[in-house]
Length: 265
Figure 1 (cartoon, rainbow, N blue to C red):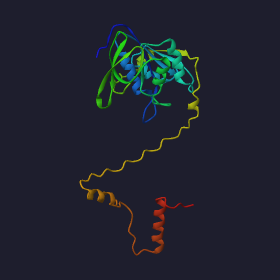
Figure 2: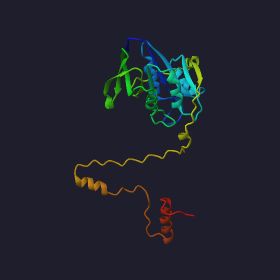
Figure 3: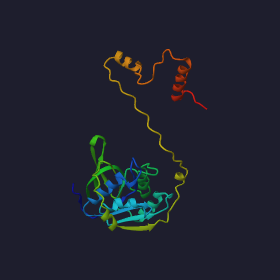
Figure 4: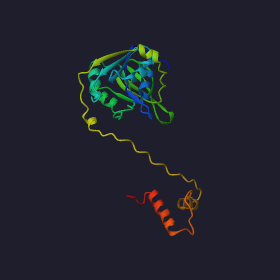
């Protein structure tokens, strides 16, 4: 849908470094890239894409490869708090619309950054938008994504912060050649507040999820009781009859050892 505006808009989009759910490889974040796509499709608007972090991160090329001519990077240490860095920047450079993803794919991934940022900038926040319909007379009409494909039309005054839902338009393909021509504009942040909370974290490998129990479909109570009390059919094992006692005892011992009932020192 073509956006209708009565004046030129300044749009800023925050991007973070994503992580592939299986391999963990750095990539563009799913909802952050949708926020960039949404902003690039807005007519009569000036887009600024901003990242708080390391300007040398190669994953930024996935965003610039979408057709961006420039990405502004607010350089900060890896253990610095991005909220303080972004608050410092937007206090003097607040756009009409500030778009973010729903949550980062690495780090805290709490999804609280848009809310804390909107509170500090003293502007409204809209969550999970899928589209911006129009902007007229300082008021924007947006579509908020709801469960089961439903949409809700909301009106919000400029300036505001909005998180972009996964239901928004999918991002265009990233091209390597275009990414190389993009400019990385680096600004050193004076905030660089250390994230004390994150320093105290201890990261451990995730445990495998518990397997779901098999759902038994039974029409009557008797069938359900029978299915719940029925023993599983044995698929292995051996029958020993008329064997020496020592061999039968060894077979029982090996089974208990295999099942973890006893431990051999």
